[in-house]
Length: 201
Image (cartoon, rainbow, N blue to C red; front, side, top):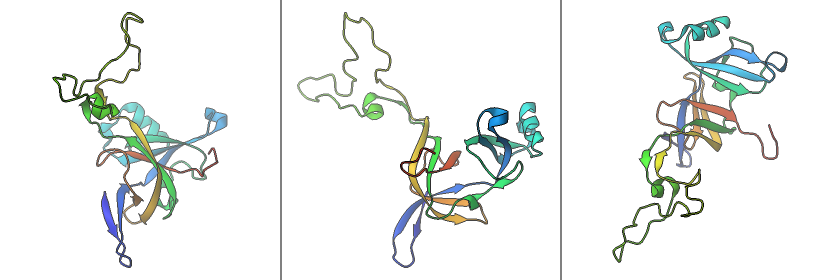
């Protein structure tokens, strides 16, 4: 993340800089051949030795060099296999949603993980940050599945909606999105167009 200053008004806009491409199209799926419509994109060229034989063969059918990541997006496209998808797809002011793997927080208690309230600190209480009751006693004589307890926090797929494209750098393939996006620095994210309210697309 960084900040951008408006030279006229002096306002500060927090933005996240995302390297968005170029992502060549590996495969275009259709209803006739695959049962649904989707586009498969590749990202981050790597050495050939870092891919398995199956991955090299899959990319070879599209006559593309080895790439580390493959991501599939539902929907149709006018582009063909081998053509790159760049930041030219977006324009400043576009509404987008960004998906990624959120930052892992490690093992956390119920107060931090589920926003539980703590117990009393006075009168000899030993229940300051404990989870409290997790279920009944004789009936059902067990703890139900899904009870919120301490455990690993974060590290799950998160989608941030309602973001706005602030600026585009065509030369360096950079997309500046207003606000924060899920995941750590140098993490992989997926950028999708935000559907308008009321539509199901």
